[in-house]
Length: 166
Image (cartoon, rainbow, N blue to C red; front, side):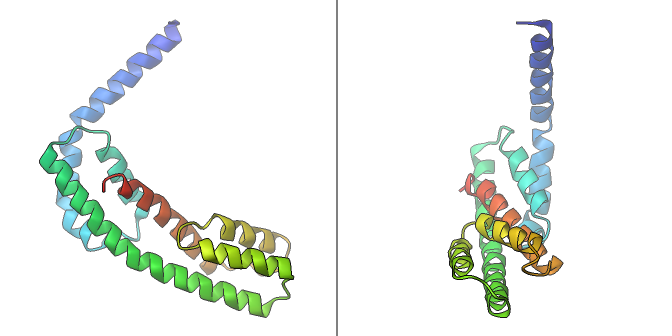
């Protein structure tokens, strides 16, 4: 092992030990905010939820603590489901309006239809279509619409992290 590799391994070890030492702090943090998290109080700040659950997965938790975090993850997922459904409905409605208001080719309409069918689980294709159409000048950029797609993308990423706790 080279001196650089030894140094990196030592740093990784120190970081792991520091994280383990913070384990109780992360637990108390999650415990302190659990009622707010369960009620959807953090739903507008999905990166914070993701970060918390990522860190919780890196520390040693007792069986009882894991059980409580599992319930917390389920409660958050339930509150996010409502937000998810609302965003999907809004985006479908707005893109159907875009379809009606613009001269789209049959191929574009088919691509949009496929993207909207996938929207209940992924935003990738819709984001790609939106980006291409705005770049080409086919549709006018709408920041509100873009924010909804970004929020839904973040929601899906957060849900993926939470599912690991179910």
